[in-house]
Length: 145
Image (cartoon, rainbow, N blue to C red; front, side, top):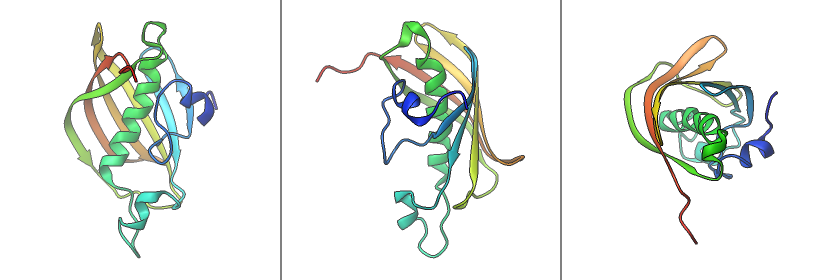
């Protein structure tokens, strides 16, 4: 493990119940691999779906994006900033994710210019691809409270 959840929280602003990355396994300027342990105790399982719990696909995409945000916001020039979704394309859900799965989150930055960037992300359970998307993002200053 490269980063634990406390170290991740020092980089991105997400907190429970919406922090969807437990560990960072690989990290460099263009690539990140993270891990989400899908325990079954997550709040969303109470309603998705009672008696047949499945992790919502949009939260799998969000988990990939959060891993990507660790990659982007780890850069010194973006320390203390926020990364917002700017777009999603070619989103595909391949297989369901159930409680007890370890979800591996991968994102490769494919292009960036200033505060705008693009990435290709995938989520796996074991070697099975469960979701993928092309994402764009914008890095912004945190609003003043």
